[in-house]
Length: 474
Image (tube, rainbow, N blue to C red; front, side, top):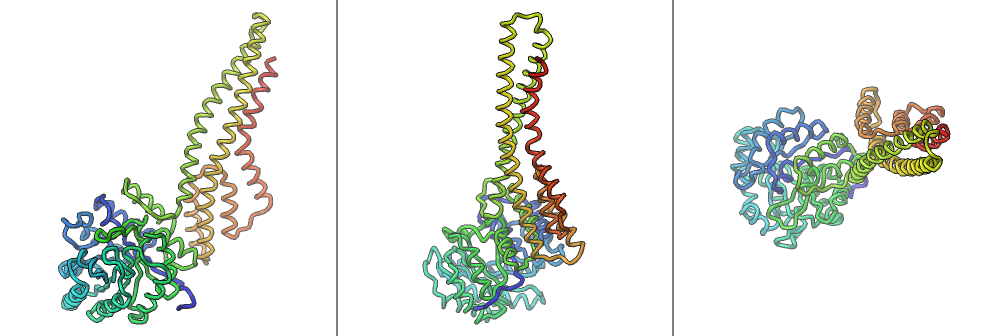
């Protein structure tokens, strides 16, 4: 087993194919192109954009050729497609894909359900695809993906020896490289380590990728096990969408955002901008409203922002009520001061009592509003602190050596805190610390004072003004 982790890993985004094929929503082509563009902007350099299968079988992927054509205009982007047979491979060659993936299931039952071919018939199809590729003079790579490598919901147990035999058969048939997939999420880290070590012994660096599903919540643990033995490329799907239509119980893929975050935290470079990736995830979530999305990255932060928005609505209502009571109280006090000589003593006492009760009510509202506002700001502040903390640790991992990189980080930081309208002083302090600028003690003191004034000054006035008006009007 390898004693060290790789310094760099690649994430191949499969959401546009594996993700979309398993949900009911048919995403318009324009939105897919936007997805590709934003994924590229976020630093993703390997995308599986679709599959060349009949549209009647998978209408979600009917526009694969259009999406592939657009993706090929982005420099440095490796564009792959899944093909189930020779006809699909011919289209992949015609459209200029960089890589085609031929799925082969080690489970005979799943292979027949998915492709209507036995595993060995798929191997023979790979040999025909290789011959056509070579005859066309294409530089397209052929990857043989061995699925259900750890078990199958249709067949049950899948022998490790059979998985390795099929992997070797794919290489012998002409596949440029091979990968292993835990199609139904049966794997655990020990199983991954054992099988991947043997796969590397057979295929060496031609064993290129691991594909995990999060059915039992072990996808990230399985990725770590694969990293330990030296595998450094993984399939993942944004928001964890995906699965196999012909494998009952095969839930979502490893989530791209969770995987990118874990690798960054482990100081393994992926080239992915996490903030932009999460913005893309939010856009995709809006496009797939009603579909089940997975991934745990930023759920706490999102919940805190939502809570802050609820408090903000309460804040607006409380401010309105407090303003009305305060105006009523001040008006009543002024009226009493002006017309006191013309009214009876009993009426004067009654008005004084009403003024005192209004003042108390205003004070109570101010206290309640102060607590609500403090909680609202605390939620906003904590959410922003999470975002800045992520960027801070990423900055330490990146260790930028020039002003341009530092400026880019500053711009991303500004975007991360834009949603938070409160307490920028403390966040600015964190940012200055991250930039290594040093923060003088007087700036730290001023930041704390600004925070205190921001939270308490308004409500201090609300507590002081009504009694002051009452005294002056007497």
